[in-house]
Length: 219
Image (cartoon, rainbow, N blue to C red; front, side, top):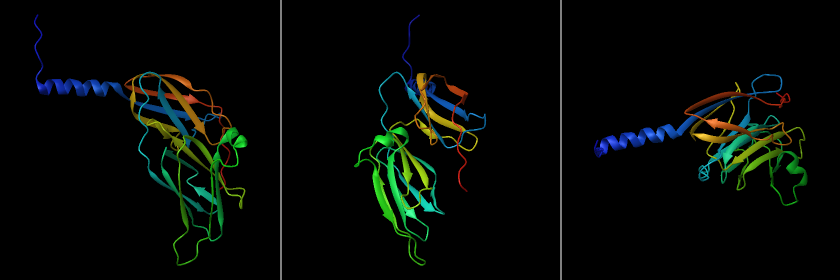
C-alpha cells in the first residue's frame, strides 16, 4: 500500500489532536489529617521528563491589612510578580516577609522585605507599598506591631501550581502526560512533605490524604 500525503487541513487536525492528547487535566482533592477538605493549600505538579517549562508571566496582586488580618491569608503568584500591601485599618501596621517554615529561622538579616504602613485617615486613600518577588518559595508575613497577624505568599516558577478551594480541590490544566511529582504545601507545615509520584493521564483525578491539621483562624 502506498502512503498518500495528507491535505493541509487533515494534517492540522491531526496535529491539534496530538497536542490535545499531551495536555491533560489534573484534579487533586486534598484531605486534612482528620479527613476534612484541606482548603488554601498549594498544589504543584512537576513533570519528570522533558525540558523545564517557562515560568508563568508575573502578575499584580494586592494584600490588604484589615481588621488585624492579612487578606487574603494566602496569595499565590509567579516569580517576578508585584504585590501591593494596603493598610485599611485606622492604625499603623508593619509588614515583614521572611521565608516560611524552618527556613525563616536561619534567614540572615538581609533576607526578605520589611515596610511600614500608616493607618487610614477618613477621606483619604489608604497607604500602599509594592514589593517585587524575585525568588520562588513560600513567604511568611507578619506584623511586628501586632504579633497575632499572620499571612503567606507562595511564589512559584511553575505553570502548574494552584490553591485548593473550600472543598480542598485543585484543578490544573494543560499538564503534560507521563511521570510527574505531586507537591503539596500548606501554611501550617514547618517542613514541606516529600513529593508523591504521579502518572498523568488525559484526565487524572485522585484524592490525597495529608498529615496537615490546619489551625483555627481568627475570625
